[in-house]
Image (tube, rainbow, N blue to C red; front, top):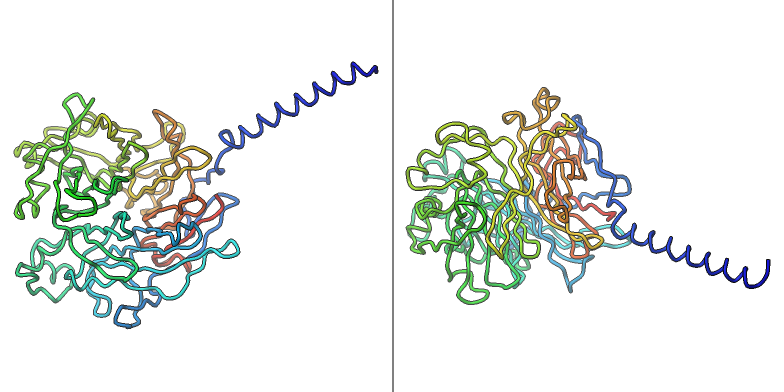
Length: 490
């Protein structure tokens, strides 16, 4: 081979190496799957996650917690929202705040719901708890009730929700077993429940109830980057999407509450000012209905990704809007088109993911739940807790189910036949404009009986914290009681 020909062969070889390298890199960036989805399993009593991932239990129901008055007590259960609060902006050292969706009497930790805070650190690629588990003291706000979701505030504090409240003082005792029904702040005790509460996680102390955000079945909240705007969801029938705008940045007690109103053609929407008087805020769902805010069915968690909000609507069994429509209520367009059976009756066993574009106020259904047409054993229903993460330059929703046995066929036939509850966690690629059920990637099959909830990632997207709530007590330890786990391997 002459030198000229040899040089040409060398150039061709080097060019091919460069091309293959580019293709390989692009595949690593965008073409390679994040994980191999796990298979459906309707006989599972542990956590099933993809190959290459691992988990560690960080905090379980019954673990010893310490109160601000230095009392040791068994930690509460029904673990829900988990918020990771970085220390010095670290994704490997921070605090975890955990809500407890309880409503039981507790002489040591306070009646009703609660929260727990503890320090965590990743050392030698493993998460460890540093120091004690600290019970949040809610006594100075008159205790709390079923703490569900919430949001991290710019000042480092937490807004925690109350998802349920008694309808009378009698019910506090007869239904929930709480004996203290004395007046609080000059009002009947039951009126003290059902609000948002600000908590300082570093002092483990509730600061105040935020009355300006209204009283209803608070599910979740999303504080926006401007530090003035909070979006809120309600687990009501009807449910309303709320927005609160503060007069001054960081002042959550003074501002204006709005209800979302979808346009008739559903191509846009607007925000309706709601009255801010105490009597209106006490019954703000009914007030919003009378002001023609759009009605939904059991909205759950809310997540902001860029200029869009994603909201889970978990659905329900048979339900009617007779009273609300007589008041002037307007069901969202998709409910009328897909869930209305007759008159003002609705049936919505599967639920869906909603997308609200904040630039246009257009709300659309991003993904409907249901049984896959390609695989009858695959059913996605009752989406509830949800978070987002950016991995390899793509945004994903990470969605947890919250089915409860056979809810109008909201699970596969095999699971319904067992009469048990199995829930799963899915990833959804938000670059897919009109996703279908087949675009969901199953990341986790949860232990029998449990709801997966409270999910959140560290800022670098490498650790996923999730609560395993109320699993079957027949499961082997550690998944025979509520706990929080850290999943690594991303």
